[in-house]
Image (cartoon, rainbow, N blue to C red):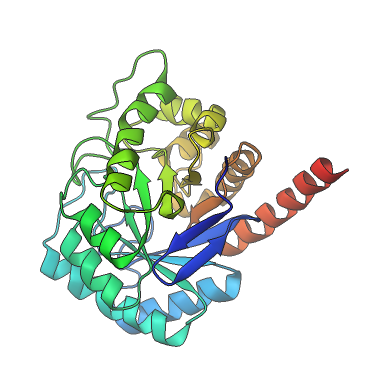
Length: 289
């Protein structure tokens, strides 16, 4: 049975339409927008723009996982980057759900105390054994993303080795993480799966995952896709600058919506909001017609 809402620490998000998660990286080295929103004031101005463009969720991240080989940061530095921004968004935009993009339970715990409602863990709780308990105690919504390796190499091709059934391998590694989260006390309706497009995956692997996304949806959890500005889009379109890959991102998102994804993590919120809303109206008309 498909989940119709996503429970989080402060309530629930209905999944009866596409949900747009706007990316807010407060890092110096993210692959597309690193260094743009380092001050709290700049980050809050960016948050205001994301809300105005139609973001349902703002995902705040303070540690890059860029493909060129990211440099891990300590919990203290990551907290210094994200916590004032999360608290500021929670005060200024109380109707907007805030997510913290972190693999560290200490950062997640403090962020949840400062107003975040969701923890987006790109390691699916692999890298910090305390994370399930922290999220369960707070009643947080969680995103469990498929990846391999650590922060410094999970977005490279270091671990991009798959057999004939890429999706089968992704599910074989991701579903046990969801089971562990439930055993820790996280409600099934609070769990969202992200198949990790571009993480430990070459272009052919990402395309295979997107083409067979209904298999991920059939696992019974809500599904998030994060294709925004990714390298495989550049390889397909010839667009070298990540910020110019908005059209490729839109195409992938619309197909993912048709295949059952309901949550979309993007840099370009307005483009995603408009395209997904139109695609959704067409899909609904087809189903109800």
